[in-house]
Amino acid sequence: MQYIVGIDEVGRGPIAGPVAVCAFLVSNDFQKEVEEFSKKNKLPIRDSKKLTEKMRDRWYEFLIKSKKEGKCDFSVSLVSASDIDSHGIVPAIKKALTTSLKKVAIDTSVKIVLDGGLKAPSEYTNQESFIKGDELYPVISLASIVAKVSRDTLMKKYAKEFSEYGFDNNAGYGTKAHYEAIQKYGLTTLHRKTFLRKIKIV
Image 1 (cartoon, one colour):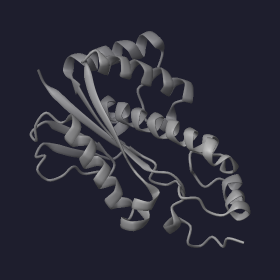
Image 2 (spheres, helix red, strand yellow):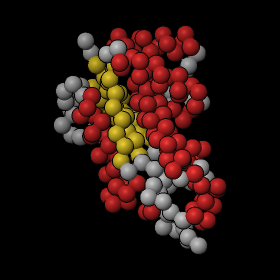
Image 3 (spheres, rainbow, N blue to C red):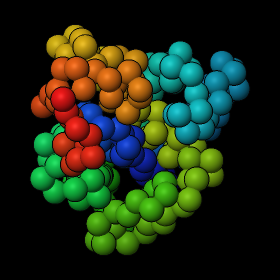
Image 4 (cartoon, rainbow, N blue to C red):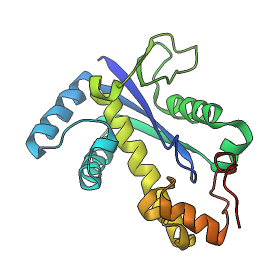
């Protein structure tokens, strides 16, 4: 049976919260099942940001069930804001990517397709990166969906602890209301201080 791994990241740009990278392993057989599920439920397979939250949740529910049934495998790794501040966003993404890939890759020769400028470690010899890869490879879209739902769920949990910042609505992105909250309440341990150097906290 032939396998392929799709990789995508979510959370490169927010000013708070972790970055998330998902590695998603599928077989040819399961890809057909994904297409059938998409048509039957009128759920497009595309980049998670182009789907509604309800659509993402439907996909996620289907993918969790499929993983439990052994039809696919995926892993999401998150790297914290403090780690991003210490090492930079690119090394943080690389760290998360490597961790996720090690959990799902059956061997280093498996075919890997990555979104944008992402690259797997060099020992994975059969890899290729694609600009807008989530539009070319459904398996990258699936990785994007799982990464986004996982990260958004975590940010909603953080919203209960840090209710002033609206993490359940902004997912850590720099909205006007979020910046206003920072001015009023200061920074939390979830904020990426290196992303906020130009902000003057009153």
